[in-house]
Image (cartoon, rainbow, N blue to C red):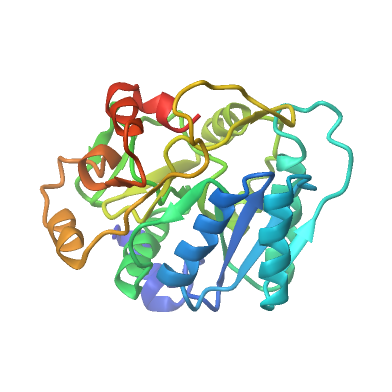
Length: 294
């Protein structure tokens, strides 16, 4: 924690309180994922049992997805559906939905929104220790607008020793996934544009940052169903897209992961193990990281 943050913490002036179920809304952005959405919800119930959750659905037509949504609501879960036409947009109404949920969370008094996609799962618990780690990253600087909770793909990451965290350069400040500080995003004056890259570059130009923590807790499932402009994207391999997931980490695996040297980023191939795969496991190991998740 830098000197400014220490003063803010001691005087009660910090705008980054400890992340908790009282100030953090988990929001799942959903569209036609069916089984993957079910995996996502199951992992949240297991790993984040006390956090409030809302599903923001982009008017799914898929019967399996509608079934999952109905079951969730029957159990008392919250769903908000955007029935507005998608007008051929590549990502449907995703950015309108994100804006709506940011406003909803702010109106309900939340400091943070944890944005989750319906093809994601938690693989380890979102404990108070993890929440403290993420809170410290927000408190390190008012320019930190997001903490990305995902395991990483292979790539070039900078190690930030003072923060015990990582980034991949000053040009990345936003993703459609992760913990977002609502007040800071609103104070930036940036209006969400269509496309993750436009928002990433726009917020970076304003001096904001997105950090990757030492302890990741979630990841996209391998080989999800994929859509482009609302239509399913055809893919021959693997055959059972949308049915796969990762095994939850064991207590020993978590200990081993958190005992690793800082210069080893939390790569998904190092720490996560796919399940329900037979021959598809060969495809998993042979494909590039970017091809595993789209």
